[in-house]
Amino acid sequence: MSQWLKKLDPYWLYYVADEAEDPAAVPIYWVSKWVDYSDKYGLGYQLCDNSVGVLFNDSTRVLLTSNGEYVLC
Image (cartoon, rainbow, N blue to C red; front, side, top):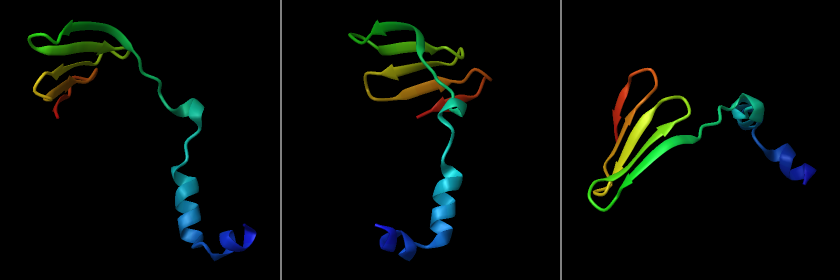
């Protein structure tokens, strides 16, 4: 194993270590409210940070972030 690690590009190892995050620093989100109108429209939800979104039956997704940014996916 150590021979294999020695053959790796040092820049790649630095990049991977740089991208690693402390799990405690990663935000945790959960659904705080939801409504199911999937028979007609789709599923609506609100996250713990007050972002809201809708997953429509035609696979369209809409998200309004807590800072007011509108995203259509």
